Length: 148
Image (cartoon, rainbow, N blue to C red; front, side, top):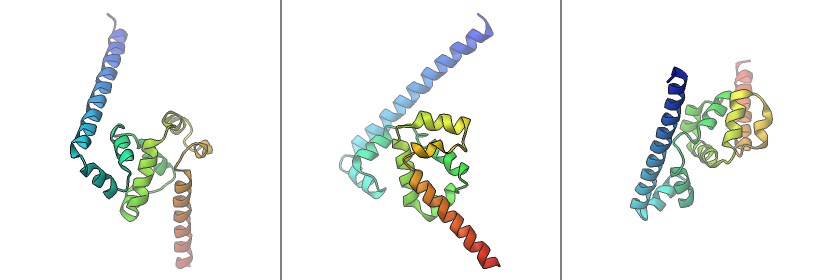
């Protein structure tokens, strides 16, 4: 057996193992929510989600909003500052990204042409991201005016 075929097999086996771990982890998260009973509704409300969205997000992989992190970085929006200063907006961005049906297109665009504005045509967070970008520009302009 050649090295190439062993690596190919390991890649396939590794992929299947990752898929199985993700499936098992998802099942565990959903079982935990089911076990919470009526408290699941309280949890959802506490974090600003509907119960249905909570279950949907729990069924997603933990990296379901990774594209958002990359998009924020591309737009020079400080994710930590956003979470600290406006946690509801940060959570809503994550929720919308996690539930988005355009993951593959977004991933391809971020990998190939992150500066291409085509993402604005399909991203459900476009308006919020534009508003955050505009707010940052306005704050920067006000800071420059205050210095002069």
